[in-house]
Amino acid sequence: MDKNKILLKGMVLPMTGPKDFFARGEVAIEAGKILSVGPEGSAPQGWVPDAEYGGPDFLIMPGLINGHTHAGMTLLRSYADDLPLMEWLQEKVWPFEAKLTSDDIYWGTKLCILEMILSGTTTLVDMYFAMHKVAKAVDESGFRAVLSRGMVGTGPATELAYNQSKELIENWHGKADGRIKVMVAPHAPYTCPPDFLKRAIKLAEEYGVGINTHLAETKVEVDDITKQYGKSPIRLMEEVGLFTRPVVAAHCVHVDEQEIELLAKYKVGVIHNPESNLKLASGVSPVTRMLEAGVTVGLGTDSACSNNNLDLFGEMRSAAFLQKVSCGSTALPAYQALELATVQGAKALGLENLGQLKPGFKADVILLNMHQPHLYPRHDVVAHLVYAAHGSDVQTVIIDGNVVMENRQVLTIDSEKIMAEVQSRAEQIKERLTAGTEQS
Image (tube, rainbow, N blue to C red):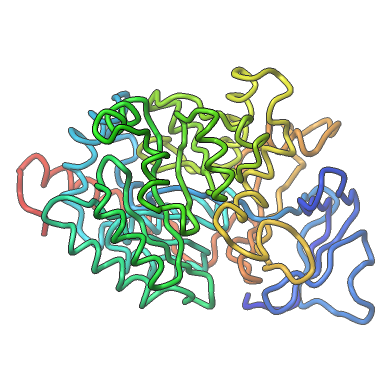
């Protein structure tokens, strides 16, 4: 359905404040935007929808925002498990990635988008390569994305990555009816020396875009950078001028109090990836302290290789539980965890008019079927969403005013074809690895 007039009925959680909830509410959508939000009967008088969705047992809320992933890495799901980060990267992930073709990444991205739609995510932030293919997959799927070509600042592929980053901005920033934004992505301080980081900053300045990077993910990273440069990764980024641009920083696990103040001062959007950090034993990000200091924190899954699913409902639960075990049972309450995946995620990424159900905002909306055994009794619907709900409870998904999933059926992409393609391609890549053949 293409940006028709849509009326959604049910319980409405607009994410505009902890007390804002309509037990019997409705949301009117027109021309890709939210027209009205309120109790039943609040749609403009005389306004007639083309279609209606929902009912008394449905909950309507903003689509979820996945602030950090590597979409094409769905091809590595369950390929590289139970390893420390650097061994995981150097011995398993990077050799596998060296065999990937651009078409492999296209299909891996399609699988990522399929999984995200099915679990209520409507926006992803991606850092990878073959990004022209990633953009094509996003465009075809009707999804929303912030895309960036990951750049390593040393080695033979540095100039290629830099030039492809420029091309991605020129060809895709603001495209797909505005659903695609582009950032510059120096991979991390341990892969990008200061001189290259300054080139990346200049590129972002030239095109007026933000920067997407990994930062302070592991203690090994912090120790190595401190030994090499005499200062921690965050302090080094301040010195090279990275924070002069809008920055999205994934992880930020190993940070001290002064660094938290720097993140707040420079309005860095931190993306918390609790389950990836758990699996790779990277540590527990001090999210509660960051929020208290005024840092904007969003939520991400990281890749399907380090998670291994892309379900943000599970991520919210893990985020809340991690803060509770670290800081006490009252830390990161349910509504605040929901904010990480919606309104705060949008703010962290610099995405305007997104993450809340408000008149004039973009119509990225999901409907959950709350008539499920694990969602009764309904003492607290917000608590249910964080502590009991699953991505599979999502019934209908609307992105930019377009219905992309109805009654658990994804309408914009062929689910069966995607799964078959990914399975076939993953097997071929493993054969190429075994044979030691060059990437085609």
